[in-house]
Length: 298
Image (cartoon, rainbow, N blue to C red):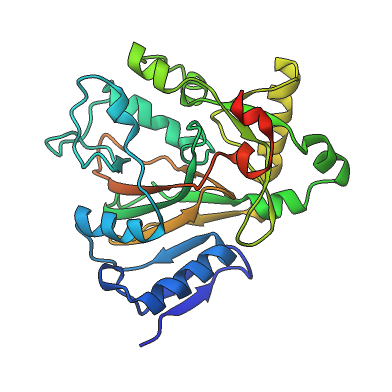
């Protein structure tokens, strides 16, 4: 049976049925890639995955990232190093205590962001699988940064063309008062340059590229930079650009980090278990390089 695609809006978010991703065909993969380019967020209900199967499917899209927790000495990983652990469980599958460092670190996922923009080679796409979910809360919101860019005044598009921001995960965590980074993490998470607006090579569309990880903008005073990033974020997260996904167990959701932002919403994480496992695929090149800006080499 040919897979079925059900659009939520004409060009943002679609549900995909009649496909088992743990035994996907070449034809199905081609159709999925085409739909992904158009919709940017794809929801696949009822997908049976173990970790190896999820990673194997993700590799169809490119090379996999390693978890940021690998940067911290002595961190006890619950999952494979190529799997991002965005649940609320420890290595023994117990709910993390309120003052646990990993829990406090992961609270940053509730800020609007795009995965791995704090890496010089950022993420192309993320694939999050719901192994267990809370009965209420914990949904994920996605913002369409292509539509947000299209809706900008021409004067703003001209203003941000060629601008380069500095991204660091320490910037986003500082907004929550989290500063517990060791020396190896501070070296790994030093700010990296990313363009504020980028053209997507597959669709040709322009997109904003911002996140809570973004701080300074090169060549701009800090106060002006913060104001501009805040204004762009407020613009891009207006309701007309945002879709909320309410998770079902075994959902796999794939999103394009090049042209979306997302955030996880609150739930009672001291009462309910939430086991969410993400495979993340790297982009093909740094954003500045893709846009032909030599500043990326500085």
